[in-house]
Length: 116
Image (cartoon, rainbow, N blue to C red):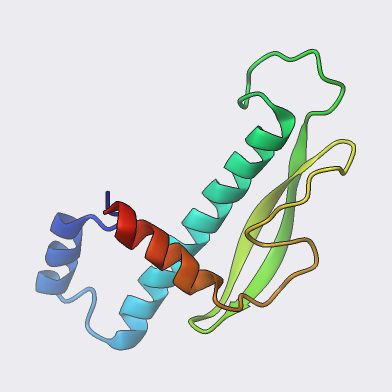
């Protein structure tokens, strides 16, 4: 499994869309953002015990998102972390009030490298 569409990457390199390390870093931040948001949504699904849009008898449910700016060794980016109605959800990948990723980027990369 790979998060990178190799055909699209080759196309962007050939067309000159990605010409610098800054361009590549920007694309990497977009991938990192998507992984963090998807992982957070899956953490909430696990916490609630049912999938999004699935009916449940639980009194707790999804309740929008909290926007936060994350600082990483690759630069800053904004993420949307889901929340629940009774505030019992404690995200593990990017914890509440956490704005610095200390090694989380490396963890995410290593997990996807193993799975690829």
